[in-house]
Image 1: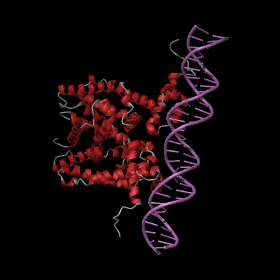
Image 2: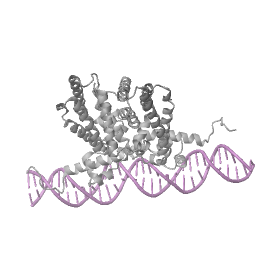
Image 3: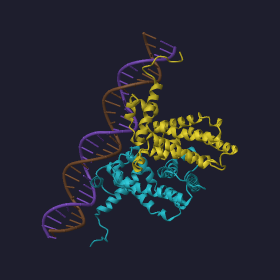
Image 4: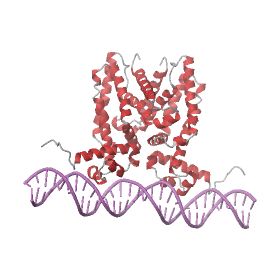
Length: 213
Length: 213
DNA sequence: CATATAACGCACTAACTAGTTACTTCTTTA
DNA sequence: TAAAGAAGTAACTAGTTAGTGCGTTATATG
């Protein structure tokens, strides 16, 4: 029997998956330094011993969680099929996607922040990440070229700079939503505020990229 | 004698200043959770007991370091005297200032990130921060109004959204410079890369704000 | 059924960490 | 100059934490 139909009492795959999900939550909540291995074990309803058995140590576990997070966002991005849309629509779709992905997956932002606090020493050990992004930058580059051909985009825009900017204007707003809500004395997470921000972001990028914004 | 001319062996003010400087470094390097009080004491060449004597506890020390960091950047901003320049020049100067401040004071970014990881619970306890920013938003609002009067800026731009965007496009690039350099396979901190980024940022904002960019 | 193998869990340790106690030394001022 | 108080220190405590040794239990396979 190749496919398991009954729930096993012992299930290595399920335990590993529970540990990874729990680790993602805990690392996102407290950062690498603040995360507690005991807490991850409790959340995962697993024994701490299992974490060390499957993942080696805390740092390796963090690296795997991070790799998973990057793979997830890039996979979702590839599913957008931007190449089937007019360049202008595709660009707007990419901006919306980026914003909504950060909104729905706040742990992504926190994990990346934590990794940068540690100077990306875990990502340096990872080899599969580079190709993931090479394809992504290529996709945006092709989109920009197509827009220029269609006569809607200005030529000469660096796809990496554009990528960074699209990410930045959403990421910064959301990662700093707590201090931002205090210093600007408004609830940055109110539904109207979120809508307003998305609209501002779309306009910012469109004015940068389009000939006739 | 009101002014002390000789270096005292015991100097409360100097010790407090050394502790604050050391704490800023350590919190910036490791975050609130990762920072070690013993390490702060060592860096400050002070006894750990002095930290507790002057600052209460680790969390209070972090709050004071954070308040100082916010006060410093806003003080530097006020020294720009943007109101004496044509609106367009003033805006560009603000963008350059923001970028260069982040570059020269990388600990500012890390402290803010750390505070947001903790949902701004320290800043909530601070009262002097709000006024600091009220004045700043007012200044940018006045700048935008002046630009509209001068006929160079588009009307209807929200100063808070603009502030956030100016900060975002610099902040994100720098805070994620480690992961960014890996995923985009280029040294984001190379002098040419920094220049290129600043130029891109200025163009992004100018296209958003100016009638005739 | 027997045996190997892998999943799982308890209870421990060695190192670390925020915060404190109890003390000494220096500086100011009446 | 004497006394008070502030600056400074070493050694400690009580609690926490990443990581482990070793034993138990379930499952697959011959």
